[in-house]
Each structure stands twice: as C-alpha cells, then as structure tokens.
Length: 289
Image 1 (cartoon, one colour):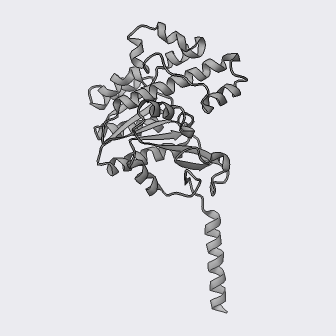
Image 2 (cartoon, helix red, strand yellow; image 1 turned 60 degrees about the vertical axis):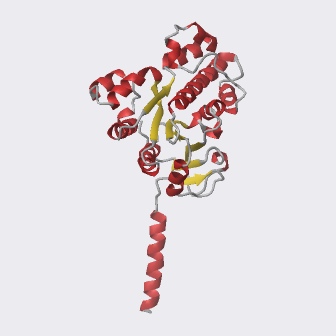
Image 3 (tube, one colour; image 1 turned 180 degrees about the vertical axis):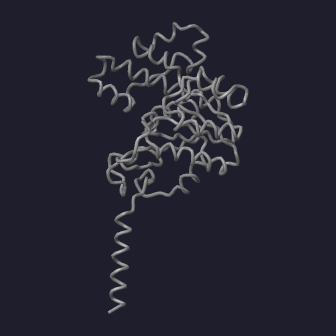
C-alpha cells in the first residue's frame, strides 16, 4: 500500500513540475525541427556572416544576442567582427573612438544618436566589443537620407554632396521592389505606388543595400561577422541578405529569426522556413519598451 501511495505521489509531483515548466524560448531549425543552442553556436561559427534578426523590444532576443556573441567569440578564436543596424555609418568614427578608449562614455552616448533602448539592449554588445578590442560596424544609412528617399524618392540621393555619399552604398543602388518583402510592404500601404508605398519600400531597400555594403567592406578573411538587425531585414534571406549575396556571393550566410507565439512547443507553419534558426518566444514575454 505504501509503495502504491509513493508511486502515485511521484506521478502527481512530476505532472505538477511539468505543468509549471515555463521555458523562456524554444529554438528551431530551418525545417521547424527543435534545435539546441549548442547547434546554433556551432553552425554560426562555420559561416562568414551571421544575421541575428531581432524583435526590437524582445528581451530574450537581446539576451541571446549577447550570449551568442560571447560564445561565438570563443568558438572562432576571437576572429569576430560585430555590426548593427542601430548605428549609422556617419557615426562610425565616434564608435571607433569610443571602442579605442579615446572618448568618454558620456561623449559617445550624447553624440551618437542612440536608440532609446540602447542602455538595456545594445550597450552590452558595445561594451563586449570594447573590452575585447573587437571592431564594430556602424552599418546603417543615416536616417536623414532614408527619410529623404521616403519623402522624394531614391533619385534624390544622386543630388547629395559627394561627401554625403560616403555614408551609403555606392550609387546608383540596385533596388528590386519585386522582392517579396518589399512587395508585402507596399501592399500593406495599400498598393504598389500610392500613398508613399513605393518610396517607403525604396527607403527600406537603401537601408538594406547600405548595411550589406558596409558589412562586405569590413569583413575580413577567416573572420565571422555577426550583424544585429530587425528580423524583417533578413527574413527569408531577403533584404540585407539578398544584397550581400549579390555583392559577395562567395561568402557564407547564416540567418536567425525571432518570433513570438502563444505556444512555443511547436513552430507554427507561418513562422517556419524564414531563417536557418528561429528563436520562438512566448507572446506574453515582457517587452523592453
């Protein structure tokens, strides 16, 4: 009798523990099969470019960015370069000076047009680069030029002063608005040309083209370059990835996507096949802003 009671109690406690299990994320491969973090690190270490697609306000994505960067640094014997959408190309000098310890934290943070969530979400990456003497690419086109494209069209970039053009991909940029990501963006705006839909897609494209350009310019043979960007810039191997594959087809690419689901035990069909690895986070997860 006692043995039976103990057995039933064990089953009950086991079911309670299982019911209370609350994983913060689940990881899946390109086919939607469960994957491990160790598999992600190993795969990332074998590629020239790693695109970490984030949801900008998702704390799990930001935590894993730092964890992966630290572990990738070890896996590639410190042959690592960092880059991010969140830093604009005309701030590369400021970022270089800060990483070299030549200017103060206050000067850097006051002058670099940092995102509002920099302190919690991107500063740890910058500080890791600084403490390990890693190069960090400020890859994005300055927002004033992307805004110009949105307001007046991509042709307006040609009329900028020559010095301004140093902070973007070489002109004229190839813009293929038939890419599904750009077509979807225009459709969400209500059509292929009206209400700023086409120029919005062009603005997205000049960001992607510029990030791809500076990623390619700053990669070195034997190194892995990990780039942090919104998932929409690299999902389905489009956006930045399309441009880097046009510019440097001989370099290998691995993509990471972040999604939110109510149930993370299985990757939904709509979230499958968007990247080489997908981080699936509960939709109830706290946001950073």
